[in-house]
Image 1: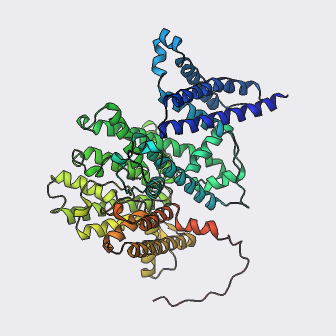
Image 2: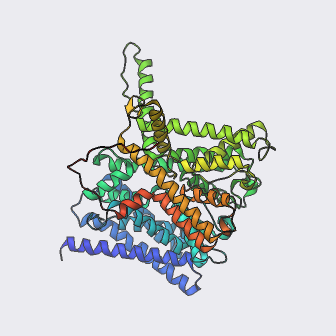
Image 3: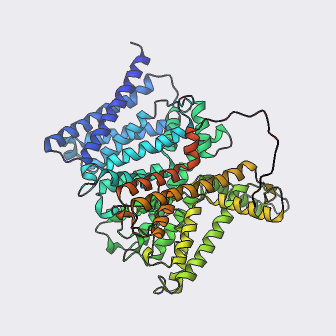
Length: 587
């Protein structure tokens, strides 16, 4: 038997062993089992650790493949961790060396096995055949699969305290994957720590896209990817060339984890320790809310979100969360462009100090997309803050100091942009404030971000088009650039389809739950479509049929109606002809 055959069987053995161990972990955490079953599970974990050690070493001797340094470092860490965990499971060694007692925790074993499974599964090449499934269909299927897996996970006996129905599990999973935040049961009291961890994983995977994680890890360990996969990820990452696809993926993950880690640290120190039983609870609260914020999910372990007593006046916490979901809502291409601009700007200013006698030309790297998104975001934030402050001054803000009113108004203006947290009583808002929030929810975040809505650039392009028509211009120009006709068509298509879909959702829910107030239903449907998560308090009162309508609305809002249409309508090849143009009466 050749060494290549041995290597093939070794990889298969490692993959199936790690997969079996992951299934065992799900059973271990999700079901109640006897002592005998627990002992057998521990034996399986120990076998996986022992089997993983030689499989990591042998692959370096049985293949001519040259592993990159990053993969060697990763495998070295896994090898050392597996060795420590294997030794810590032996009683005599653990008693002789107290050092191993630190690693005698099930959490370490779960982490090691899951990482090992990711390592082994990423070795398999996943090639997209466009004749069988197009990128739009793959995108939709990945979200649907994640939603169904999440619903199954939430229905595990140990994920909730008293069990959950399929429709409520499906609703919660869809809300988490589509980073919406609408809930039919209280996240903090209804779900166990295991259930809350499932929700947190769904939020993270849904916010960035499961294909982002799968493609990056596959490329990380394999060092290459098929041409079809690169084309698909090029559209996801908004890269200019195929060569930039995986560097863009790396930057996306790096930016995400850095902001989430820093956010968790700042949140931790902004909290009052007296509201938490243990340091672990405080840490989990910090990480849950930083991920939920950056991904614009709006899920909270607090019963009344941030309106909970002890948190509603914690303005530093509010500002930290607002910064996280504003940054997450800007979009990764915009953040990368801002980073590039800041790098050039600092370089230029430094050069002026070092060499004042010479001039350094700085390229214009803050592109049109970034300028439009940043300007629109600033206008919506400032305008929303002023309107919220004006309408709620003597209402929900009556008991606040001026700085408190300003901070709450700013948060109230930022959170409808698909974040979904609330620091005030939503049911006590004035009608005028609700209308402002509905508009902000409809607009939502920016393109290629973790947020939803029609997007800031869509609103900006439509506004520029209105102004151009009023001026009698035959084209749309901004910042010395002409907007492409394709962008104009796409913007108005997105706006029209969103109104139609929201209208249909309101129509069906009004039929299924005709006792509901129309304003409450409309607010809920806009919140679902724009993946916001704000509610006037009626989500849990909907019938099963209305919950299914909201599930479809959240899904359509997350993947976009245009993507749904593109998945099932064949592309038209390039047309080599043109019909005569003719004006149609519009007004």
